[in-house]
Image 1 (cartoon, rainbow, N blue to C red):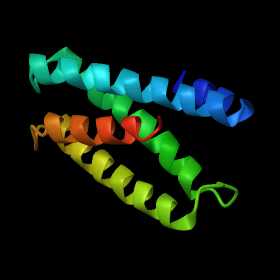
Image 2 (image 1 turned 135 degrees about the vertical axis):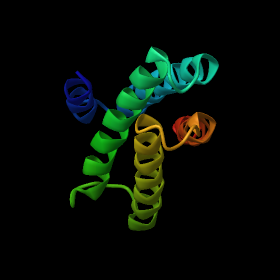
Image 3 (image 1 turned 180 degrees about the horizontal axis):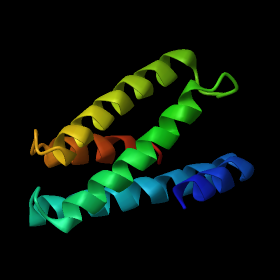
Image 4 (image 1 turned 180 degrees about the vertical axis):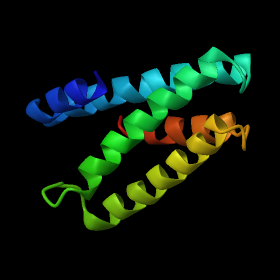
Amino acid sequence: MIMLRYAEIQEDSPTDQRDRERELFDRSVDLLTKALEDGVKSFACVEAVHFTIRLWTTLLDDLAAPDNALPKELRASLISIGIWVLRESDAIRKGESENISGVLDITKIIRDGLK
């Protein structure tokens, strides 16, 4: 589903693209907020981590594409952030970390930058 939605984003105008990207980040923020409330061993956490990993994996694929129009430095920064989010999310998934709040904070910052 996320791949389909992201493919739809690429066909839209830049404003529509940004709105849809923000919707996906909003969903991740909502899920991570619920996970933070319910704890790392909850179903909400599993759902949040799974969605967030899928979102960032898709974004990283797009950021690494040679035809991505973002400035090179911005792409590099977002890729670094994305790698951290993926590593931290995977550690949460494996029970090696409880840093939901860190992933949530970064996700909010990136979402808010899409305004």
